[in-house]
Length: 139
Image 1: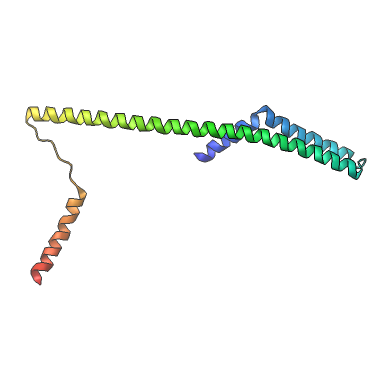
Image 2: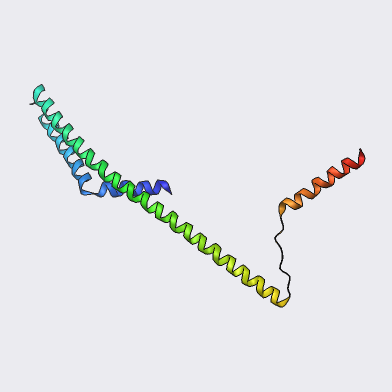
């Protein structure tokens, strides 16, 4: 589930115009460099590289800001969902208690005994107690 959410986030980011602009800029500069590589001197190549590096850093900063926004929104929505689930659980438990109370009242009204919840620990403890008693009697 988390993988699909990450894929959705990456897809949404890749569809944004700023990301597409960065990709297009990098591709156009790469194409320009490939066509003019034979004509460029070392100084011109360094200058082009520095310009490209500045553009990439600026675009990366923009992208980081957008990613940060998306991550904050995801965290906020997750927190909201957790709060809602907790409140729903609390309401459901209150409703359950109310219904159980009403059922017990109706059962008492009609004189019907309600079944008590049996504990698994009690049933497991009995054989152990019996064995301990048998050992104590044998000694």
